[in-house]
Length: 344
Image (cartoon, rainbow, N blue to C red; front, side, top):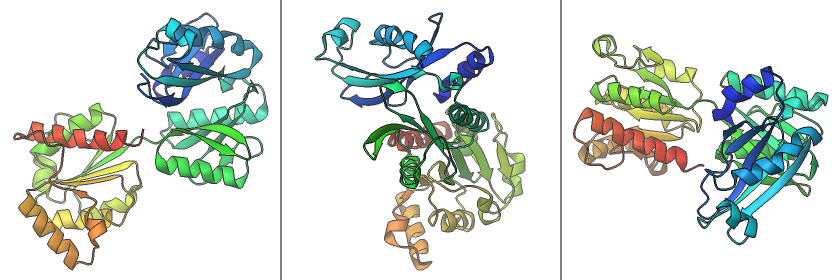
């Protein structure tokens, strides 16, 4: 849904009622991941996709009457279904879709409250989890924030806890509570990329980070690097400080990725001592195997466990036999994306 936010904002501002169909489960070689969405207006305008074209026609046909009725409907497509073959889902997969009128057009106060907070969070890069009750009938939604704040009707504590679990797992999924199924969709904040050290590789990594949607933050206490490095794409933040002076300002959680590039143990270790005790989703460190062995020895002497030290990806990056700074930056970005996609 997040990638369709501009269209959602436009259509809701124009008071143009529409339905949203969301992929809630897949099996096998499904063409679109769980959480993918298709918007369908009363004029049959469409945005997004639930199958890359395989079942869109059938989903549009089923979604149109829901805009008026306000009901939700589960749609199942698979290669054993005659209808699925007819609309082209012959790639060997199955897909389960839940279609409903978009909640912004639900007049119930609780639904309006959920929509207003969801819209606010999405527009301001604030994380949340949207729960959609999977019923054949009037739709119902709940919104849960990482601090356990929750909006909606009748929200039991155990359902809030389930929402928090889903947020930490970073995976859209169906959950069940007291015999009722919900689709839990995670809307994380924009991922942060902490780069320790301003150097040639940093320049290209910042450019790639921006390209792939990361908030880029460069930290290096050496003024000659922070002040003299010519960035082709400016980082979102640039700090001429030691990591320990600024890392506490950031949420070091599963949506934060850190790469240590300074080549100076005083700076690299200063960052690693904090990062290894945090919940960041990824820690990479530049250097050869010999450099990593020395790093492991220093961290072991400093009291870090084998498990903690094992979190470090070093040599950093996917092995593409990289030689130049651009190639090394590309290999690092490849490993970051690999880590991200492991949760989808």
